[in-house]
Amino acid sequence: MDKSQIPEEYRPISMWGYFGYEILFSIPVIGFIFLLIFALGAKNVNKKNFACSYFCYTIICLVIFVIIFAIAMMTGATANLAEVLGG
Image (cartoon, rainbow, N blue to C red; front, top):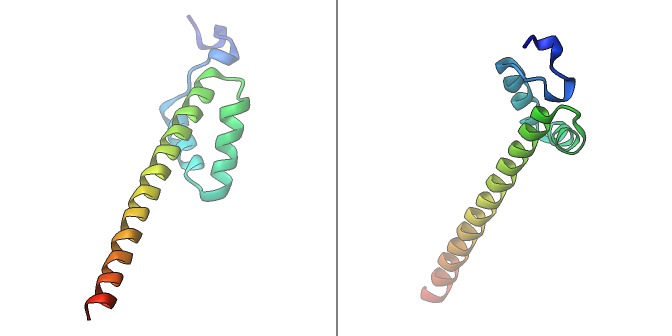
């Protein structure tokens, strides 16, 4: 089947397309806006699925960062408290 015979919503994305979208999505604020636009409103199924998977990856990284930050804050607060009480 020729690429021109595939409907637009099912047309595959090239390797450079995925690479470009990943760079676009990794831009701090603008990338997140584009990520939401593609995840919620892309006509192409492949773009939509890639944006959804990148969004899940972003959420997982954010949750891990928050957990590590909370543990670091508790550890630092406990060390400060022990220092103040101990001497």
